Image 1 (cartoon, helix red, strand yellow):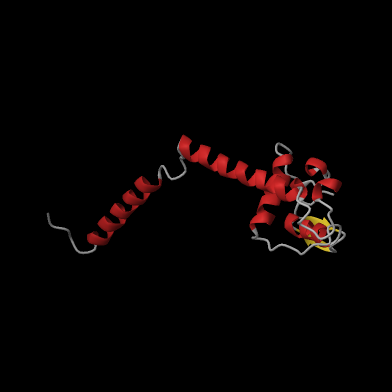
Image 2 (spheres, one colour):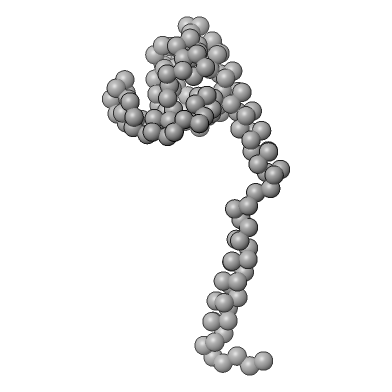
Length: 138
């Protein structure tokens, strides 16, 4: 087969497009096993979050998050990011959690990527599952 000059790049473009389309056609389809594994991983972190939420060692005075927020009450993660008066700025949930750790719990702030912070956010958000997102709402 003879390919005229200039047609070679068109052929490669067509072939590349075909490969791209065929390889990405199912990229967003997950198996039942994938979904089950992801749900189990998530629920494991939620459980860890509940443990951190009730851990008197998170702070230095024996106070736990659950004393002020039983079962994550009155935290409203669905409203973050929002203006938080205590912080004087619009903040994500993890910054407000740190405010609580530093102040009422008299503890040391956690980094945003600390596994305990991620677990706390997972637990708090899980407790409000099904509630419509409302960023910025007070």
